[in-house]
Picture 1 (spheres, rainbow, N blue to C red):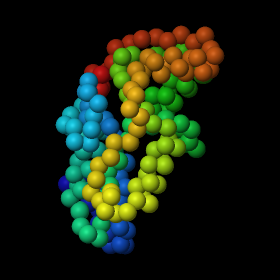
Picture 2: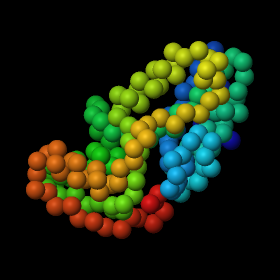
Picture 3: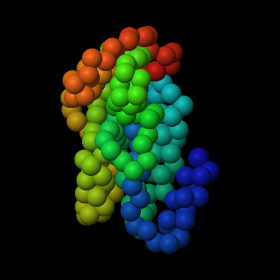
Length: 178
């Protein structure tokens, strides 16, 4: 069991917080040609995804009548925020297009499901407001059903910025969900 997750959940139980929403990731499914459902086989290809799975297992093991764990597997989140995250593909490519006047796309054909940060937040709020019987010990995939390639994202950014940026293509790093 993940020690930090155990400590966090134990503290929530101690203070009688009845719902625990965990923001997991669709990366737990790894590479798949099929649309993933909550019951799809988990196939993590990164340490990040493996850690998310371990946290999910730990949190769900605390299932009691007084404690309601909810797992939300978020698609790739994009959108504005007070603290920019340039490790996220849309933000990274946007910044490169503006600052460097070009974008390097690693693994152009990698597909990702996306969700806007506001939609992700709405989903979390809905689960908080939902009756416990509807969300208790449940896993939800949160995001759009349409996947876009990283190259398609780069082209959309280029068009939105109305720039003549160059898009350089490079192979996906080893171990990425290609």
